[in-house]
Structure formats: C-alpha cells, structure tokens
Image 1 (cartoon, protein in one colour):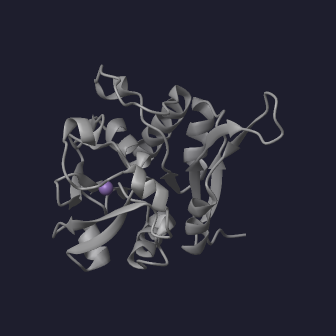
Image 2 (spheres, rainbow, N blue to C red):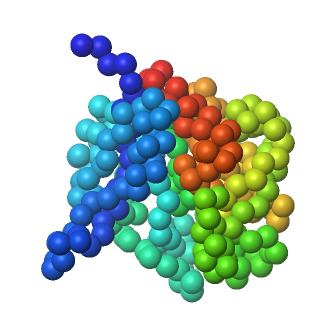
Length: 251
Ligand code: MN
C-alpha cells in the first residue's frame, strides 16, 4: 500500500496522571493534533521517554516535526547564566526537543515550531532568547498579562498586531502586511540563528515569526503566536498548517 499522508511527529510533555500516586502520562494538547489532522497530516506523538536512537529512527520514518508550546528553555542552552523569571523548565523536555530538531535538520525535513517551539528551533540552531520581555525589553505591547489570562476568550489571551515582512514566505502565504495574533509568552527570540530570517514582528520590535532563509531547500517556520487556537477566527492561520503538511508530503 502506498502512503498518501505525511506522518507528523508531535513532541509530548509529561504530567501527573489523574490516577494519582506516582503515575505520570505523556501528553500533547489536542488542538495541535486536530490542526495536523485537519490539514491532511497523520500525527504521531513522540514518547517523552524516547532516547537518541529512538529519535534518529523516528526522524527517518516520518516526514515532519511539530514542536508545541510549553515552559521556558534552560537558559544555559543559549549561553545565558541569569535565571530570574524563568518558569517551568524541564531539562528532559529540552534535551528531547533539541535532539529532534538536530535529527530533522540533518534530514532536511520540515520543522514547524509554535511559541516555545519557535524559540527551541532558534536555540537549537545557535540563536538566543530574551529571558523575560518585561525585564529585558520593557515595551508597551502586551505579550502576556494576568488580565489577558483572566479573559482567556476564544481568541486566546492577549492579542496584538504583527507586521509581516515583504519577501518572507509568511507574506506569500498570508498575502497581507499586517494581521492580529494571540499572545501568550513572556520570552521571545533575541538573536536570530544563522540560516533563519525574521518574517514578522510586533509593533515593539519583538520577533513573532522566523523562517528558513531558503524554504525550498529546507522548510522551517516558527511562530510566537498560537495559530492552532485561532484558525476559526483568523482562517489564514490554517494556511500555515497546510503549507507545513504540503512540504512534508514532498519528502
Ligand atoms: Mn506576542
């Protein structure tokens, strides 16, 4: 039988099981799984306990990698020794996802990173992050507020506009120079890794999208916002999943 759909690996996280005690479960938020299914991909969740040889095998047999949102990345991975305001660091998750990105970089297979996922791609490729936007940049644009969390409407917390750069793949996909996105992050990309370029920024200059400098050669895209949460409200976000699946289908 011939395969008709690309297989998309989705990185999981670990959380306590509802059965209590020491039981844990490997999980992924269903909004990512749904977005991949809706765009025509077959999602496959990476077991949290996977080791390097498993990762290499999985990168060999699958077609694309999706890195979801989550906690902060251990700052030493990008040469930073401060730790103020760092939240929900998991060394194990960092290691797992860094291995996944390296394996997919080697194979030149598509990589799509969302929120923490975009930051992880940048770090894996040698870039850096702002530890905390409020502390390090201190701009007026609301990327994450308690009020935004309290609202938690369908749009997904705080929101702001982004300016899309002409010449970027994002501009080609969206066909517009500005759009409104949700915002649910206190960190962001600082120095962009070699091989990547910026495709969108918030009005305060914060990087909201990165992509490969050559999308034909290697499809890599990272978003600071959560497209999976606003596909109904802003349908252009669905295009991103479709382009990802198309790129994975070519592999
Ligand atoms: Mn933002």
